[in-house]
Length: 116
Image: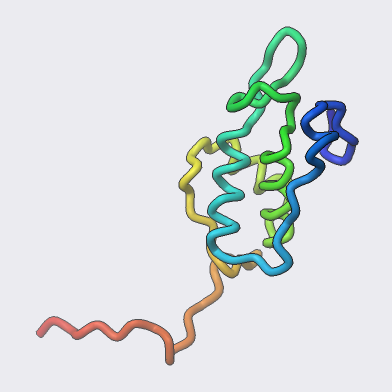
């Protein structure tokens, strides 16, 4: 099944898609990373299944995680790299920019005492 296709899984047809929050928070992004990594594909003779719940891949949570991360600014290759990395606790900067995390402004940067 491709990411844009309608699922034939009965639970998906009953429950529908998990909604993406209107405005994303850092917690949403952390949960989305966990969702795409934990609910990654595992090859079986019948085809790829979610390695967490055995549903047809991509399962509802994997699709939700991808949509959240794409809305956050990651592209498909970057999401695939997160899945391959395999760490559900990897940090994705918030807010995310193509060139890396947004720079801290001087007014909000922590001021540590210098060692003499």
